[in-house]
Image (cartoon, rainbow, N blue to C red; front, side, top):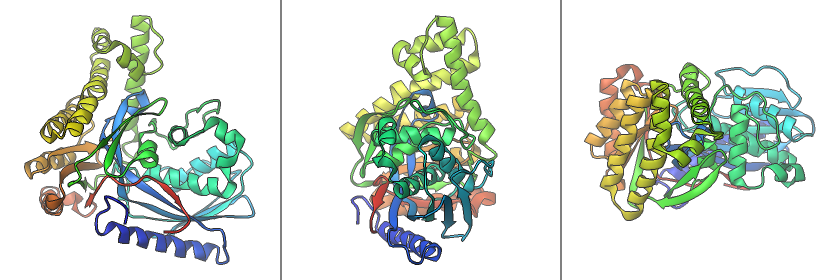
Length: 431
């Protein structure tokens, strides 16, 4: 059992690999070179809409995720089967068809097309996966799937041994940045951009999944991906994850609202550079060098852009560094108050919260959580609550009961579970 794992986590993980193995065996009964990969979901503890604009985040991986079994094929066909539902898709590495928005095959097609374009030639693969992550819930099931597909295709092609790959993607931090570009369709290094999944997101999710540390939060800055700090969590605390059942589908109904926040950060940077006569490459670079001046200059031009810049400034330059210091010194009360401020700013300044997530964060605090916040894209999704391990199950059950009573229309789709900050994605030979 890995350090920090909850008692049932190892059993859940084993069942996922058993399902993936069985599904893979039905695809390649005689396979002798099957590889396994573990790809977890993640919690964005702090860093609300900051990564794609060059900001920073506090992150960790969770104990739930994808168990993946994969092997090389002798042709150019990529076959991917969901072991839980039995749904299978087939894609040629030369595929140019438009993806299917709103379906997980969109992510598979996006990864296959981009890798085939960036690092030819490729051979095909048979890939089976099983996941226990709630879908479109903010725990990054979509980015975990992107990473799972990359691992499988890379393994089948020995991609990471190629000079062309190592020249552009030299380490796991760079890999997180590259896979963020795969998902959002942007260029990376000297590689041209290509069709992504339709979101204007960043590489925070991929970084948490690839670079998380058991028992700790990792602090990263983005554009490019740069490690800043690792902050141990109290050893006797765990996260309760409350998935609202309101899907925050970055490829679905919330796409336009999500992308609007990204576009506002770009517009804020463009206006700042014009008004201040500068050439900053990201909002994060502008804020890091000129701080509140950016907000003041933008406020004279646009209240909306100033609000977007102010939320970014407070989250990146005040709340996250202060939270890291509070955790390092054991000041849980201060940590909770800072997280409350972040959540309030999401409601008042990002305008990306819904009554269900506001309720969950507030009730978690009332029920005894030392800190609680919505996370991810917003417009639905999930809330995390940090509490002592001895009280985690009780808090989880109480929060679920109150939520279902308050929002019965979402109760059937909601999901509540306990997790520690866990291990990152791993390439395995056995489980």
